[in-house]
Length: 232
Ligand SMILES: O=C(O)c1cc(=O)[nH]c(=O)n1[C@@H]1O[C@H](COP(=O)(O)O)[C@@H](O)[C@H]1O
Image (cartoon, rainbow, N blue to C red; front, side, top):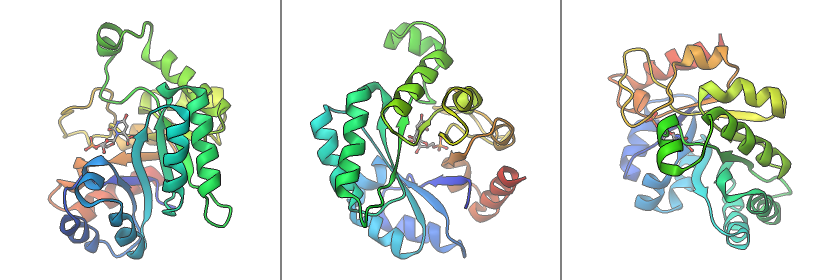
């Protein structure tokens, strides 16, 4: 299984089809709000029919009953991974799992992971703007432990927290890490960034890569370069 999840942050079905048509193998892709709001959930069917694996990244964050209902409907899409915000708390995360179990196809629910502190958030933003005190890593670890207690399968975090999360939550608890940049790439809107090499060294289970692949001159070549690094 591929360890690189490609973020399909596009605004039309045509861009998705053109992008994926370049690959002659199944790719693990992430469908987020940009694509969903442009194309609706219909796009999931198109991508599944092309044979790719899907992380549906809608980051649910609401009261438990609403999240449960939402997840019940998402489970019926047959995607591989869905997510919530850990800031919604343990009761909300438990409700997400209940909803997924109710909506599961043939008793098999998608994996559910919790976004901890977004990789675009720096230490300063977390302390001074959001108002959470202490170190980012401590909040991320606490959120990961909450996610585990609620029965989730893993978290979204930055590369810098993956090792500590495996230490406290176990090696089987998934760490999915965006904020990946090649050495020559600009940080852009991300704050806690790292290279694929460092992600492998830190034991990240999956990396999420968007623009470094989708906007590269040769996306297939860049994808393979990154995936080979992760599989070393
Ligand atoms: O949940 C996510 O996937 C996510 C969480 C997070 O903390 N940071 C983050 O960047 N992401 C997503 O990962 C992708 C990163 O894109 P690039 O910065 O272009 O590689 C985007 O689709 C984000 O929505």
